[in-house]
Image 1 (cartoon, rainbow, N blue to C red):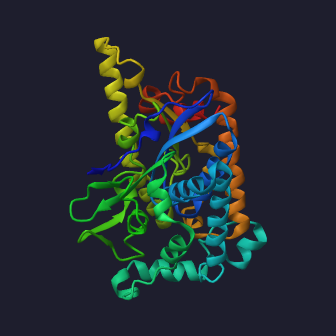
Image 2: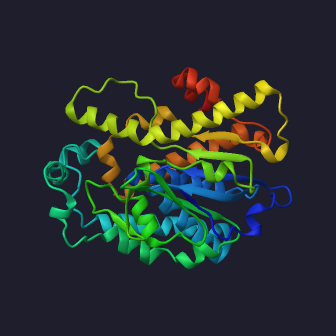
Length: 364
C-alpha cells in the first residue's frame, strides 16, 4: 500500500539551471547506514546535483528524514551537518551499550562483535525469548534519539525533497509506504523494527516490523515519481558473497542478507522485464516514461564487514564507514555523472544473467 498525500509541486519540477535531479533509494543495515551517510555527504557536496525524492528503509529511512529535516532548515550544508550530528548522537548513545568489542578485537583493529561477551549474551537470549518478554516496557533509546534529532514537521513540509519510508505489515507481510504528510516518528521506528529486538510498532491499530522484509528499499514510489527518471540505489547489503558460509553464525548471517535483498531484487526484476517488453514492442515512452537505474555500491569493499558489526556504533568505525561511502560516491560521480538523465549506468540484464559480473562493472 502506497500512501502519497499532498505531493508538492516542487518535486514535480525538473532540475533547475544546469543541475541534474536524481531520486535516491537507501537500504537499511544498522550502523552500516554510515556508509550511506558518506554517500549522501558527497552527493550533497556536489552542487551540480539536486535530490528530488528519497525512498528509505530502516537506517536508510533515518538517513532520509535527517537529510530532509536539515535541508528544509538550511539547504544542503544544513543537511550535511544534520547527518553528522545524527551519527555522532548514535555513537554517543552506543558508549553506554553492553555491545562492545572484545579486547582482542580492539588490539587487532577489528570492528566485529562476534567475540563480544555482551553481543553473544543478547544474541543467545534473543533466540529463546521474545522482545515482549525481554523488554515488556518497550524501552527504545533509539526512538528517543530520533525524536530529539528530527523535526518531522520539517520533513513533511519540505517541498524540495519528498521522503518515502517503508515498513512491513505484520499481519499480511506487505509493504506499507509512508510518504509526505504521513512520515512520522512511528513510521520510521516501524521501518527499523527488528522483531527479534523490539515489539512491533503500532500504527492505525496495525502492527509493523522492519521494512527490509518487504522492500529494502521500495522503488515503486521513485518509478512513478515526476521529479526525475534517475533512481540511484545506495546498496549496503552484499548481494554476492565470495566465501561459502560454514559456521552456524555465518550461515544465519547469509540467510539474513539474502532475505533483506530479495525484495529489492524482485523490484529490479520487474523494472527489467518492463523495459524488455517496451523495447521488444518498439514503444517510445518519451522522456517522461523513462526509468534509469544506477547503483552506488562497491561489493568487494563490504565483504569484510561482519553482520555483527551492524551493531557497532563506535565513532572510529562510523567514520571509517563514512569515508568508505564518500569514496564510493566519488568514484561513481567521476565515472557516471555525464550519463545521469541519459541512460542507466547499472546493467539490469547483465545483473540477472551474472550478478558478480554486473556488480564488478558497476564498481568501475
